[in-house]
Length: 393
Image (tube, rainbow, N blue to C red; front, side):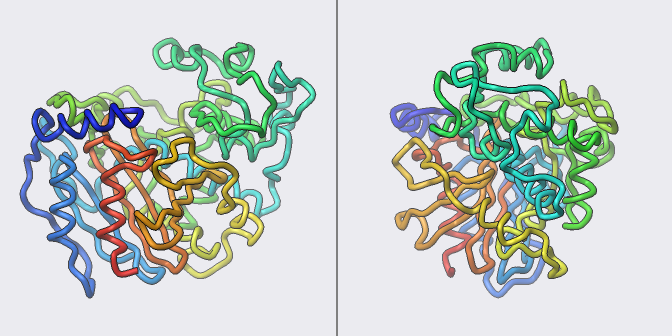
């Protein structure tokens, strides 16, 4: 993923010349709608070199039409449809925050609790050993827990949570709650803390408190998706026919997540969630007014307010984005004339997004590879989808 203004400009110049060409021409639509977005959506997806995509619309608090195009796999050739499962990448962090806030609504935790109380052992930043680290700070990326070199090495040579926390490189040299610094490990650690507190796997907790009550076909447990269409992920620049993320290979190597393992499950909540586009939209519905699809209170007013209250600005100033607890706030008239809430996900070439307005409109976009060009932190693909999908809002 290109980082920085200069790299993004170079990426944008190179993409039309040496980027992967789209191998699809038609866009399928399911569901009735007063406005057919097939033509502008096809234009946007083609422009951003999307390998395969599913875009699900929300209109007036109700799940509306779904558009799909392209391929979940290039070899063998498998088309995307509305039932395709995608790896969400960092959108999983928003779903994790929803789970935490649902548990708080049920009175089972408080986001201001010291994470040491969850872990059963003291967790402190050695640069500020007297300062408690609240659970909320893991969700808002203000905990001072960062992605250390040891954490990145653990992708190939797994280590335990305790080993990572014992490494001084895991902590920024400052007090917690002072500075925003995006951290995948902090989000993953949050999932481990939930497993430790409730003695249930993150999958079991999410299924009980999120996926089932919100009618969402979603899972952290890839092994449960045998026989389903799960999308690969491809880089479009440089173009490669080999997936950067092979769903087939990962599925073959997956093991059930039926039991909790807080020491090793820190890769789940940061990005390893698999779901359909409709499932992600169902999970996002409580962000509107705290209610579930059947109209019941799902998030308390306090929990919803905590999620939607920005705590820090995103460091790149090009687009006005702020971050709360697992939730982005986009407030930039150059992109959209109002506030949007949601999240983005970038990994292995996939560029995902979910954006919801305050009056019940929005969309989910999941894909198997696309242009990774950004302006600030906002994906250029998501920017154009916002303009098309929410043009009438």
